[in-house]
Length: 324
Ligand code: ADE
Ligand code: ZN
Image (cartoon, rainbow, N blue to C red; front, side, top):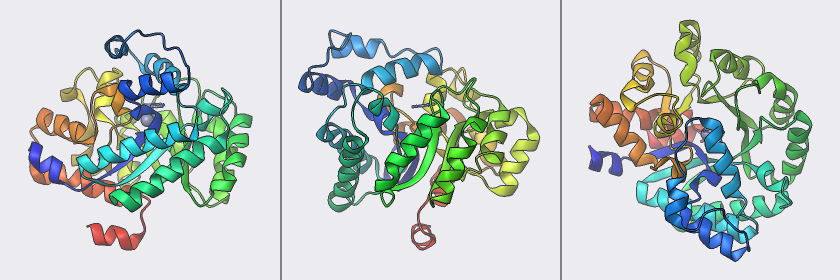
């Protein structure tokens, strides 16, 4: 199974670039930019990666991201992830970035966007990995802030395929961002949103009805409401599920309790993704393998996840047909 998964051409749809910041690179960038980390060694940093919930993770994730300051830092981060993609046989990836983490602490939007887009172009030219860039709004910040961020992104209209919504879910429902998502759709962007990770099924309904999203990120709480599961099946709204992340953040106690295989068997368009692999202990192949082993999946069932990801991607119809 391990070699079958390694050799399977895969598409990743839920990956935060800042969540690929490995401890080793974090220390290199901290030194490069004279940032003092509250850890004396890579080992003590890794030892801190024990999260009882989403907020505990986000606190470390935002702190770690502060070592990213120059265009070259964003380039190095992004290119290192694309090299991992090559190793993992990921042929296409749609990646999130969180510009507000950086603009809030004084790094200009252009520095972030230039470094990432340059690396994505080099990754396509040198490694043959195609990509889409998704700009996330932080849902714990204001609507006004999101609108300002959308305005800053207009110069990168040709490089950004979609907007998304992430960060602390509870208390920050999708409806808060109804207007900025409408503005993004009017500007021709696709839309996705994290919903139903820690939040209830209502957050998934909100992402569908108020934000009109093309995909739901996570969405695993949909099983609390059978009517919602039926709706996802009927409309084939994709869920970008992140199994290792869900177990690390206690969304599920252990992998055998995860609902991804139940959803697959019911006909929901579910996909497997790695979310923040540097923090959750595994890249895409590890996520596939952990699910396959926990549920004793056949190769055919495993391949369905990768077929679903091609279908759920923002690739052109022609490219999807060629890949299937
Ligand atoms: N930002 C990075 N990873 C996230 C996750 N799993 N949920 C919400 N926001 C995030
Ligand atoms: Zn995520």
